[in-house]
Length: 408
Ligand SMILES: [Zn+2]
Image: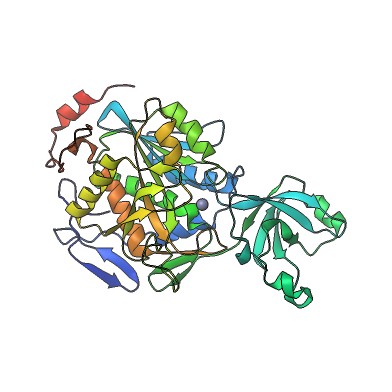
């Protein structure tokens, strides 16, 4: 995507062709614009935690031509192996493909569905939202709660809980039960629209992360590059209910280096303080430093920021007071620990019915990830307390590349 094989890429200019940011390599060759069609497809695909059927099929379709091997494990993770220059170490990069959703708990005598959440919803945004109930066939539904007109003054000041909502299918109990069973999943509806340079759609958490992983691998292949080590690209399941898929995959892969790709909070709207914005839309990719499940490996933070500086990739540091990503599982479920980092896309309205991200931040995240995969052997990973810099890019002769590849 950026630059040509062997030519270090520098972003010297960001112009707009219509509304699409476009980057230029040193040789003046533009990269393709962001693949908004793929982003839309990924975000609009369905797949609540534990029910990742729709998104898994799409990921397998997209990744099969890019991978040396592709597999699905018992819990449902999709793992695509991209062979590296060496198998002496390994890279695991996880982007969770599940989305927050609901599960059918009960169907009442009037055909209304009671639900339990799959993941942590912000309930205030659910009123009157459209959903899809994934029964024997997909049925459109609507999230209902007590109308404001019949609420007591006290009720009006309280926020409803997720379990206060019912899903209304506009059908009798008998009709509903023809198609819907207890335990079926429910997902949100929220087609993508473009707003300025932003993309607005459901489930950027974390189809945005899936997009980064796909596009970074595509960019590496297009530039004729190879990751430094065997790369296990994991599209994990059940992150939203406790990093479960990533834990299972980590135990199987036992990576040396681990990267998580996810979204983070952009609380950059009116009312936020300078200290609690976390990130700001349009200011670049977010290099994670801290969240509720991870203290990012400090060597990795410095490695990532050095790459951003070298390649003129806009970035911001992310400290997220609560919440976490698959990085938390990957770091500690590898025997001896994995050297772990995380790249996040700043997102407004996270875990609400519609989320929003900026194209510049998405593209910057792809650029950083691509650089990470191909620059690991340019960094000193010892625990020595020294100032580090990236070693110069070495062009390795083709014969040496083959000799260093060892079967795992
Ligand atoms: Zn999430």
